[in-house]
Amino acid sequence: MPLSDTKIRALKPREKKYIEADEKGLAVEVTPTGAKRWVFRFRLHGKRPEMALGLYPDVTLKRARELRDEARQYVAEGVDPRDVKRARKESALEANRNSFAAVSEEWFLARMAHLSKSSKDRAQRALDSDLLPYLGKRPVAEITAPEVLRCLRRIESRGALETAHRVKRVASQVFRFAVATGMADRDPTADLSGALTPTKKKHLAAITDPTEVGRLMAAIDGYQGTPVVRTALKLSPLLFCRPGELRKLEWSEINWEASQIELPAEKMKMGEPHIIPLAEQALALLRELKPLSSRGKYVFPSARGLSRPLSDNGVRTALRSLGYDNNTMTAHGFRAMARTLLDEVLGFRVDYIEHQLAHGVKDTLGRAYNRTKHLPQRAAMMQKWADYLEHLREQTSAGNVITVQFGTQQ
Picture 1: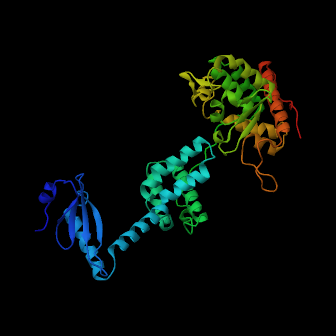
Picture 2 (picture 1 turned 30 degrees about the vertical axis):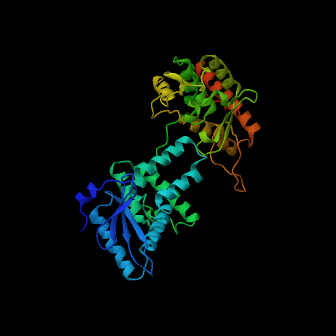
Picture 3 (picture 1 turned 60 degrees about the vertical axis):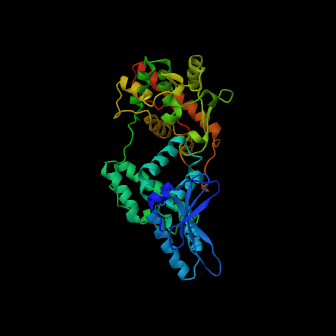
């Protein structure tokens, strides 16, 4: 008699495994542990092999009979159904290895590992939230431009235009990695040029007029906040590093003997280590703060505890309390301020400035500068910059109109 679900559920384990037949070669094997496994027994080329079809009840009686019938058709054609099953499994494994999810994981490990945590986090969010749920299982070589565009349109529909452009860039990097490693022939995002709604580039507010810079420095000098925030605010124009690099600065990254900050690659946007020479004014500020916060690892710890860095709102809030809103001056704006005045007023070479800003500058042969390139000249530039800011502050505090050029450096 053919098996039924009632009969299968009633089968009890014995000391040794045993078989209960269904029909047409299908049977259920019951093990001493109580597991019930579907098997298909057939005759082919003078032999009587058997083929596993899965465990009951994961594979139902109806599904087991469907799999048996499919296997019987192959047997009738002289084909071993086990070979077909192995080929399908290998094909599935190969497809999984070449899936967008697998390729993106390989790309992330190969291309993103050396970048800053914030860069890696942004790329991972783009993958996890906007690409993998829709493209993850697809073979990377078969994904089309319309498929990618549908992912980007979902982002646009929630009003996140800048995110859509960022996700497109991440997708493009994955596809170009697939091309480079032989897993795809081309990058389909190249066909999406102009398809997304353009975004208006927002330039973070910065003060670049010397007179206004003098007033800003005088205001900063009079700031009455906590010692941690006050020092972070005063160092922001002196160091003009990225705000995240400043607020996450660790005491171990200060080389007191060399009078410089040495930031590791993982903290930098460009994924390369960076050196910030310290002017005497900056060193004095750090020495004054050290007794207050050096018990923890962060130079600028959070008010909530030494184990956390200062909030990214710390310097911004301090600027606001001095009357500088986001449309007038931002923490990031100190970089633009230094970039402009070091070039246009103090006359330093642009490559010195760009390298100190930790931008991806290259020399005439196309080689990226290393972190020690022009370091003595950059150290002199940082001291000259600190002196210039101090000069502007003093001129403002004295009530003088700033009209005389402080000095140039060629």
